[in-house]
Amino acid sequence: MNVTELRIARGWSQAELARQSGLKEQDVTDVEAGTGKMFIDTLSLLPDGLTVDISRLFRNRTDSTDLCRKRAITTLDLETDQTRL
Image (cartoon, rainbow, N blue to C red; front, side, top):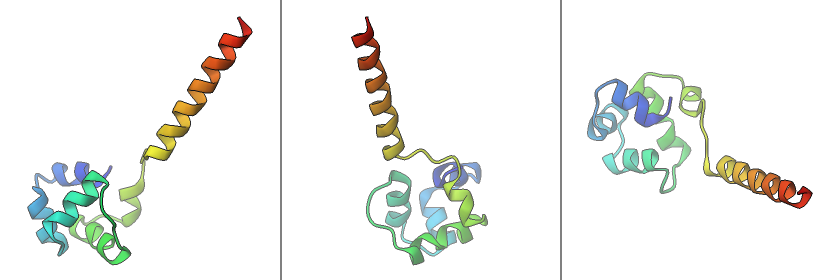
């Protein structure tokens, strides 16, 4: 589960997660949106606020790099198939 899913599962707003974690609401917004720079000291506060192990925040994570790789492979496969016809 990611931060947003964990927060919603608790019925919390971003403001409440910020309060529970000792962060600014904008920090929570940035983490959930994947924007801005996160420093390890900021990032380490989220699992404490959510009362989860930090590793849980990174499970089943699909980032844009993985998506780009999948698209590139799919495109390459399609191009290879078309040259065989």
